[in-house]
Amino acid sequence: MAEPFSNTALVLAGVVVGYLISSWVESFLHEHVSDALTQRVRKWERHPRLFRSLVNIYYSHHTIHHVKTYRKSHAKMFDSRRQEEELRRLLLDRGKHGETVIKGKFGTRLYGWGAVKFALPSLIPCGLLAFYSSHWFGLGLLVTVLLPPVMSHWVHPHLHQPFLQRRSQEPWWLRWFLGTRYFRWQYVNHFLHHRYGGTSNFNLVLGADHFRRKVRKPSVKDAKLLAELGVPGFSFECSEAP
Image (cartoon, rainbow, N blue to C red; front, side):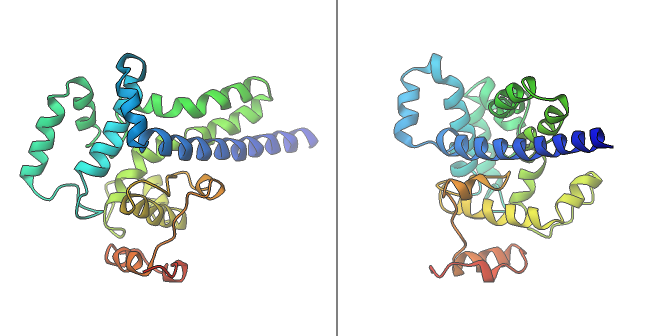
């Protein structure tokens, strides 16, 4: 009996360690690459061959997803059909990367090699840990190391819809997840991330933002806006800022 118990403990330990690594890597890279400071991006642009991938990540996430879409509403990508067509033309002029952004629903979900690139920063340290540890521990790591790309592809689009919108067309496991308290926390967290210009609340895999002191709580005004989007029962969490 001791061996199965120890194997289960190793799997659980791997799950916890993988979650912590995924959450921290996501929060850090989201701040310093996807929503990097303008000065840093300008330095990258001076060396396009070396930093092309980072510039593309910033462009698809910050420029397109934060600035060019969801301008007036957290739950409405475009204000008009004309706005959508203008952005589509702008992206097509950018070539292959622009086409990828369009296929990824204008930065709301991962597409193609973007999913692989998104997972690599977490896969590398977790892969090294798995190689030098028990395969049971590595199995646990694998469960949670893939959470950032899974959240970005499957969950992120729902973070830009009215909270109680019907989702009957989604797989059963996603419908279940979208009804959890964890998703509610994600929704509030991501709403604040967009509302304050991508300067805080970076996690979809929740946790590391708190350790990195990058969390902003909703103000009273934020709470009213969240209530309009259908998010229930969070007013007790609000800060006192107007």
